[in-house]
Length: 412
Image (tube, rainbow, N blue to C red; front, side, top):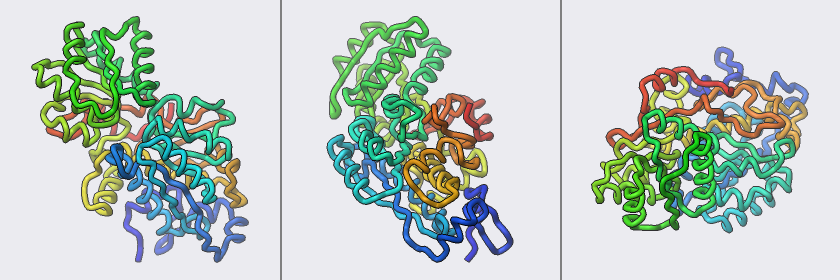
């Protein structure tokens, strides 16, 4: 049975002939293809993330995006006739568990791994991948330190997500444009909250500003009334929140209970179900940084959203997590196609990611040299937009961004 059109579209630069689909591997590496003819040994790829527990709301969409890409790739022959096989491990958003299952993945001889949603979990485990010289592509965790821990030239840690050092200045520029210059920062005490707090403070300092109030709190806090009251008394006219879970809703609901009508802004967790469903009308108008908004603004994105909703019988809970993970999976596959002898060693995959791949026309971006020896982050500022909560969903805050989003951006 021929594949639907969207599958052909997403596999560029794969070659389609009438009634026949040939992978780029066949014409890029004929010797390797000949050597592998008839081989059905799977190519094992690790996946690690929070698929149960408090961060499953974006861990599951990440996993679904990866699975969707792998199913499409396998439907047209996989890698040189070898199917891709996922080895999935649940880190439950716990750093110790994340380290444990990462060790398990490496013992199971995966050729590379896609994963991590929580920055604290990633930072606890990435040394394992680095020491093993086993490539890791991070599609969700935004902590700046994740791709800064090791010298870029030596690093096996790649990312297809906007790091917080990119998101924070982008949002600070926006709130200052809106005239909100008295910022209260509310950040949790996780590695994610700590890193995000530091990035927001640095972004404000670049504009010769300091936060008028800072609140730090533990995950699971149910009442932030005292901290919100202190922020209001300090004259804050905007709250910048940095936390991954229902604490964002605790901030919004507490603000509403106080009758304090200041805007809430932040990074992408303000687009998560924990916030949208936990805060309901108190979430309206909140602003957050996004790489992908689930509106069919062009053919690539429309096809991805259609495929996802058809496969998983519903809308994407966290579109950014699914889309970035989907693109990360294809980038890994494209790195395989850049290895001429078909020998998928960690070093060969690393070097291919750093510059030997063909352009991948993705959902979030057009990836033309997304990585290099000196740069392990695929997402750049021009790919970001400001999202806004409107009627319980995420849309573009600015009409011009919706128009600009018709064109899939390339790295700058």
